[in-house]
Amino acid sequence: MRLTSSEMLARLVAFPTVVGQPNGELIAFIAAYLEGHGAAVTVLPGPEGDRSNLFATLGDPGQPGYILSGHVDVVPAQEAGWLANPFALRRDGDRLIARGAVDMKGFVACVLAAVPDLAAMRLRAPLHIAITYDEESGCRGIVHLLKRLPDLCAPPLGAIVGEPTGMQPVLRHKGKAALRVAAKGIPGHSARPDLGRNAIHALVPTLVAARALAAELAATGVRDETFAPPCHTVQVGKIGGGEALNIIPESAWAEIEARVLPGADPEQVLAPVIAAARAEEGVTAEILAAYPALGMAEDDPLSRLVSELSGHPPRAPVSFGTEAGRYQAAGVPAVVCGPGDIGRAHKPEEYILAGELEAADTMIRALGRHLT
Ligand SMILES: [Zn+2]
Image (cartoon, rainbow, N blue to C red; front, side, top):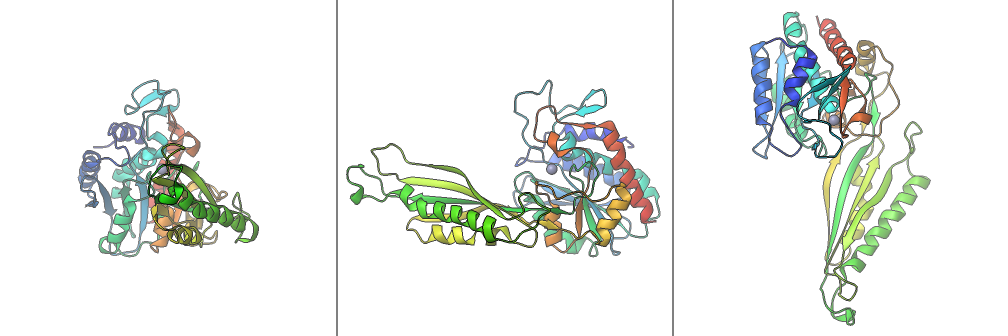
């Protein structure tokens, strides 16, 4: 089977692989396609039991090569504003419209469509294709692929994560941790607070600690002026608790996030908040999700290579997180570079332009030629 990238995109978006849900049919389609073109394919089922990553290699896996990486989970498509079925690719002029068109089945389609050409090249170093799940819930799926990477290939020279960047290499983004704190109280009539334990009151020191930490990080924390804002940030984003004003609250909770500059561990940054929570009776603290920052140097060989292949110099750091931070944390240099604009992601009528797919097609084939 030989398809153009837009034909391949039409195939991929028709599998409604919403984050947190099974992806077996799509992975089976990709595996069969890649095997049909001679790639060595490993399907890596995740611990959830109903979804998998996929890793494929063209060329000799014993040589250090490059990974082209993309996630195939998409955010749900129930928002108002879709003019037709979000899981059927629709063309409107240059726009190719579907859920996942830009984030990021478009890039994956370009990679897959290039496979027949890449397979025909005499690659002296291998090209790997990594397809992941559950990126949209905190880059969770790729963790299981990275654990298996040493069994699958020689240590790679680098990974290109094709999230939409307008084909401009992104070398740096912040990391993030999401924390949930929950307080369990003892309910009773509010006229006798002395007989119960107020869960909302128990949460207050944690909230105060979060606010103090945010202020401290802004005033005296590490700085990197290339980011906006140029410091780690912390904020309380959600809060709830209590039943009625005349009842001692039995439960209360809050969700707090930290976004950190490269070089810092987001869970570590939240440590004072976690400590404040755990110091209170009946309060628990749990990290819901975390992913590391990405911090590649401009003179790194991979940074230079991706600039050369894409034809664009690196752009300023971005505010969204990607799997590239996980690659780097696992010892694989990684750069984010892919077609389209992230501003169209997670919105109704999400689209990618046909010309944007062509630009990615060009970069991927240039990588293949670089390896011959
Ligand atoms: Zn994405």
